[in-house]
Length: 309
Image 1 (cartoon, rainbow, N blue to C red):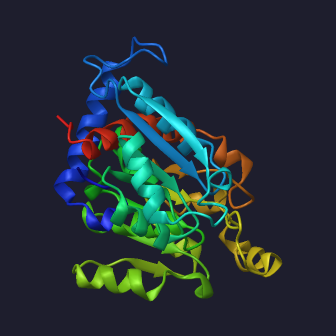
Image 2 (spheres, rainbow, N blue to C red):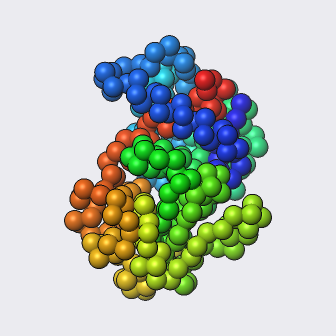
């Protein structure tokens, strides 16, 4: 049994095995309909329990399709419908019940401590579907998408992030260490990555490049990533934050500083951080990026269930 909570804690060779398996699985499904099962139905009879404390579209749908295509099933819970969400049952008791009913547990939570507590008490694998400091399933899928589109190993590419220092960026930083790629970050001074993640990068003898000028960050980039500047439940002065990021909008002018074949990716949902012509243009691959969540999460499930081939 293996958990999938943070990219930092997963060996590089295991992350690469997941991506390799996802590539094979995607190729093998070209003639199959959405709900047709993969050959061999490797997770037949298994059930994944999903619980959401925050809204979700891509994570919810992609995990539903992932487990179904592997031959298993899923049940989705909302925390406010449980005794746990009402404060009437402990995490330890909830985890023990979930371990009795299910084979795996995917949690999207507003608390890093909560997912660690579940990990402590569950006797089934736990997968982090998003927490305040990490979005590992999104970023591993993004690595897969980058390599699929560019047809190059990500270690040979210059990756750029323009935007807020959030959970997606924290996981992208972890990925830059695990997959050994150059990562340039463009953000205002007051919104740079925190000390903890930066110290972890140094500890692992790697380096990330942080610029307060978006043009410098985008210079020579092969891939530009972004995310919504104002995230859901963002407890900040929104007007001030939007003003701080005014010069960091990804448009044709900013993209001109990147390499000619630079692609654009966005984990969605989007806001005003990217212009319409870039988001819907030829350099954008956001819809393939969203679809690839299904393929990579299938391989993550197999990894956690001890069935990764």
